[in-house]
Image 1 (cartoon, rainbow, N blue to C red):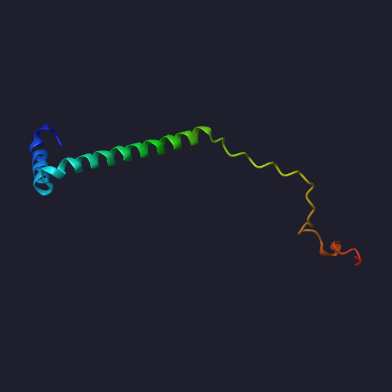
Image 2 (image 1 turned 135 degrees about the horizontal axis):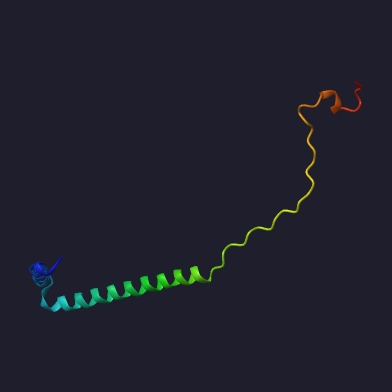
Length: 90
């Protein structure tokens, strides 16, 4: 909406004056202004809270490394099967 569309604003204000009347229009304008002000205040405070949380929250700590324990030796699948049971002789 540029300067050349000033008549649209005038038309909307004229229709609002006809619909709501000259006594109610200032009340509605005041209520609308308060609602916009409260919305801006709430959105600004929410944005401030998010910024503060992003700045003060430390990065998550890495879990401690598991202690290194010796890994059990698994039987070699290529080894002969007779060697796996000591009670059987070859």
